[in-house]
Image 1: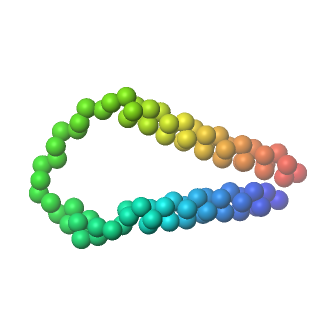
Image 2: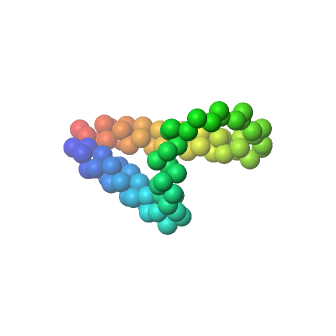
Length: 86
């Protein structure tokens, strides 16, 4: 069966998400809970977006590449498991 491949796929995703969570804890992403609590209630008008530089475009391209690689990995895993499930 192809269940071990999907279990491995889910385990890798769980390990990555736990690593990202602990990275966020270490870097103080959850420190200011009082401010975060009232953000949806503020009455300020949003400022117009700042002009984006070149580094922002590279970041978008990098994220796009990561998404494409993730989808390719998923498709490869699916094709591999379907091909060898006979």
